[in-house]
Image 1 (spheres, one colour):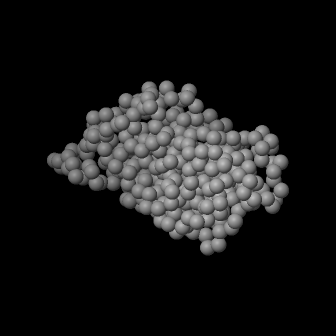
Image 2: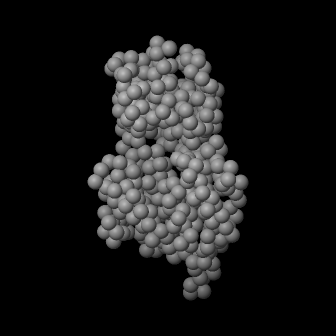
Image 3: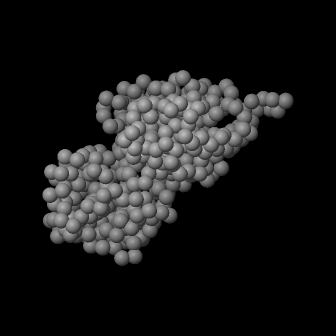
Length: 390
């Protein structure tokens, strides 16, 4: 499954000059080559010209995902948004991915969707492929956790890494090792690690046009996310029972034991229903049709796509006051609670919130265009050698 046998590789345009004189980003400057007496590109051109960007997506799922896959969703939104602004973008993802960017693939589909694929083997070849083509790009944007960092010192192309959270404290030393030679972006202030430096905090954007205020929302509550103790599925069942409202549960089962012990016994098809994973095309209807979204997490959530997507449908969100929730939810869009009693009280008043006002606030703050513009500012700063970290 080497790069020569990539299952889907679209050719790069050949009219772009190769990068020269670029060192790891601290103090680096992107310089256009001098040929035939033509002077170097001006400072203004360096600040405005289209960039050649590699976006490295994970390969657990297709990009964009059919249902679950938040990192793949982020890569899709970023890559297509950059293309829309005229940049030359190559998306490194599965061969069945859908994108307006150039698609480069070394695996046919996501390993979560094909059990014949060895995840470790597929990911190693996939990550290596972007670094083998590093000289073709001005920036490599790593949306694939910590492993690609171990390749970053082998190439001259600067690497910008979006840190989607920390699955374990054991991965932090990898980020620390490459802290001085690569660029980190946090997806929320709450998720910044105190031992790392960051160029920026950039909240995920969404395609707000894919969501709409539901014309006739129901009386039921909604849990939408991974079925896992961290996500508080059982808490949602408890709150629904205490408020006398039906509960709809949607999402992949990530912890089978938890599902069988804490969720399945309550499923009756009426008071508590399980929809399974929800396809992308159905997310707006499912999220928008609820009285409120219950996001009663038992961990410090780094971001939470479903929270922002629900609010883009005008649906109030009731969330535990943990992690990024204080950055995503305001008094006009939902409720931050500290316990189940608080969640029960919030359910009773959620209907008083103005759904169009909720959506309007999300459009202003979490539209994809805002996210893409902020990442472009980071890229330009890296290439100009003026990235500051904090």
